[in-house]
Image 1 (spheres, helix red, strand yellow):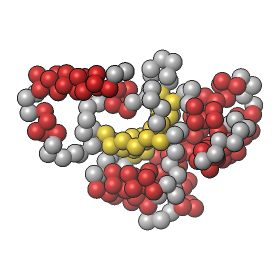
Image 2 (cartoon, rainbow, N blue to C red):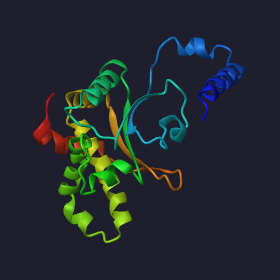
Image 3 (tube, helix red, strand yellow):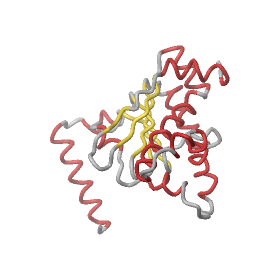
Length: 208
């Protein structure tokens, strides 16, 4: 794409927004009060606003390779704490997607340089669920299940944090695990049972 087209697209977008609401940008500039913190994959085919059908200001968004919540990653931890403690979001969504390059790369026996320690987190998910995954003979189905299990484990990682535990008990913050089916466009809710997960996690990881 010609980069100048980006700026032309921007002008068209501005005109479209103002045609609907002449005060759109004035209201946007007043601040944000998002309902969601969305943690998704950096994959260029998976955009949060589009697949959720939401507008700017409705979701605080963090994206990284394979939608990981790593407790020593200052980027995701600062986003989490700001969203929960300052913006007071009511929902945190971890959204993975089928055909995830990060998940497939993690299971490839190849030196990927600086990606190695990052993708090792996904290998750890595989180790935790090895029996279930090894029983799936179809390789593509196995990767799809690993995508789902990776989302679930990242939800658990969220619940291990002080910010989430505190907000859950004080105001009922909920954590959700979703998968975007890139083949159909559908969002799949993995049905994270927040109360059950919290009870299980706090047996060992209770902080507040």
